[in-house]
Length: 314
Image 1 (cartoon, helix red, strand yellow):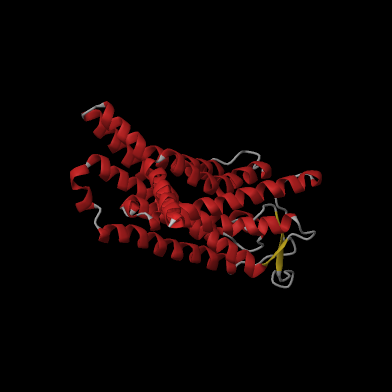
Image 2 (cartoon, rainbow, N blue to C red; image 1 turned 90 degrees about the vertical axis):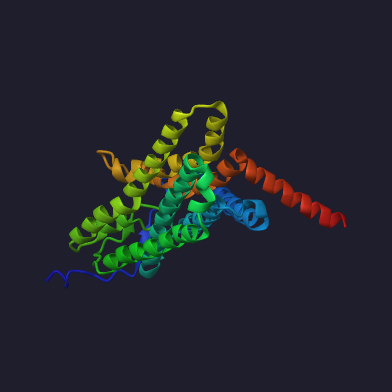
């Protein structure tokens, strides 16, 4: 009887951002500029790391992968959001919704693992500087990059397949600007207990454990600095860890605030605002954080432009 009362959902309607109609064009222009800044900023970091041999180190290997992840993470949601803001019927096909959810999980999880790899790299560089090149061998660096790609592929596929088995009834309105997993579960008329259990278990593995390992890495760094305190070592630690700590705070702060500390009223506006922070704002700010606070990136930018200027003068 339950199956007879269900209808096949071929598409979902995305309500988008809680913006007044008269402000729609203003927000469209704002988000378009933010998305273009994200794409250009992260592409610049990737290109600089590829072109400058001084940046061919483990830290910048992780950073180039993180920039690629940020670029793709923002591209999963932003183009569709911009399209829907100019559309009278902001819809997304069922298959497109599941695809968006898959890549959203994939690149979001990948960012978590890469931030953990970067924290380990900083821990080795500060606590074991004389053994850095030995510990951070090419084999280990490759493993720290490849393993997250493999794990996130299976994790995102697991949630997508579990979502695909659910049935959706008449209500197809998603109170969000993208196909968020929690929003889709609210629309399902099937039993979602298995999905929720898997989310609880894997959420700890993908988000909480990397976050705790990052905290442990920085606790060891602080402990190492306190054993032999000096102005030079503290400055070096801040110069090498400041940018990464800023990125960790932006990413995990918003994710934890949204998923692990929900409000009692379950405000849709609050959820949307927090989601915008880690899907739009954080990927846009990361290139600025690393370019403005990192001497190596500034030096690489200067060297690349100097080479270009020399070539043009010839």
